[in-house]
Length: 450
Ligand code: FAD
Image (tube, rainbow, N blue to C red; front, side, top):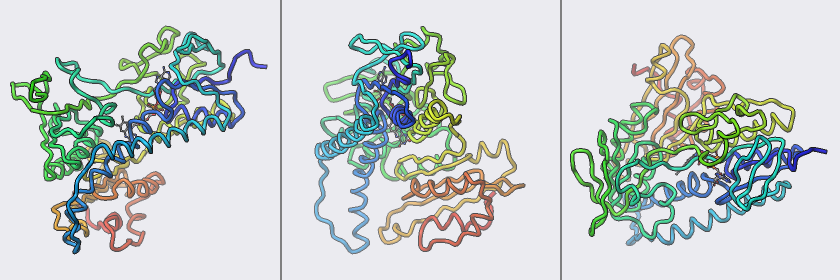
């Protein structure tokens, strides 16, 4: 008999926490989990899933326009924000239910309330009850951070954007990460007049420079105003809407101002530092390769560790934790060569190194092709896809693949398998093209451009 109420108490019912709880229970552990908001966490409730549904919604007006070149006459079209939000909410509620069922059907005891850490083996629930556990897993994710400027209280974040009463006619998006760029595309596609303001010279820092420039040009062509090298200093509420004041005094009018200016690990008030858990400067839980914190009984997975803030990574980290602790199978989550998609319009799929990072450490060859996708020939739409491959010259190993255009997210999953397996350029070339597709460019680029 264990001296503890549980073998594992998980704090946070999102991507990482639910996976760890479910697998640990399946391995025979007695598991409890607490969630203070909604089961499924950021990704399901106010992240990846609702966002992707809104991306779909925002592309229809282009489809209607493009249809003409293929002989279709489409009647008058009209977008209704409330219908989209209601249907999205129904789907999210369905998914939330599935998460709840996963927990109960695997015998995990669920507490729909906040939990904090009291000592290395004890958590306290919001109702005051205390529960002891041999292991505690912190899977509390992160929360949006706003710029600390006057008037910030008039702005929204990604948390609120999913529940606005109406589509804002004019939106200013502040920030240059993928969430900012994605929502600029969504709101523009749905009919809002969008300005994105970012302090640096180009958004999507960390991604391949050519990719960032290409996407910026395509977004501008779709009517989004991109303002780089600008810094908002205040947001004013006026009788005719909000005004974002930039350095230098210019004022951008808006009906909604979205701050997508980063996320912080959700460790505030959790009691971690008090029990000796080492935190990084940004509040993230410091963990070793097995997700163990500086207090041996306390582990952490997902966004709260600031390793790689993606759902599939949080899930892998949760799974590796369960394997290590409850299946006698020490497993390190693998953060190398993680493929990912950015649902900007156009979409980006990327795996491996950017040209800049690869070029610093390797002697490289760059293969790249910019072309008009077939669908754009009859639609008449001026848009270009980009396929780019970074190759290590001496070994011919593919170090990075970058795709921009329709289906880039789908394509990169497949390319990611090849890159993860260590494919060389010759391996790609040995694969027969699928014709006519855009992805065939990946196996037909013959001569390096640099
Ligand atoms: P979360 O999913 O955030 O779950 C943490 C949970 O803990 C939350 O439900 C929270 O309510 C709960 N919690 C916090 N503190 C406590 C407490 N003290 N007690 C009880 N419960 C608590 N990732 C992708 O891979 N692809 C995408 O396209 C993508 N799009 C995104 C779009 C947006 C707008 C955002 C914000 C994120 C997106 N992400 C995307 C990132 C993804 O959502 C996260 O990486 C993922 O959710 C991390 O999972 P997690 O388990 O670490 O934390």
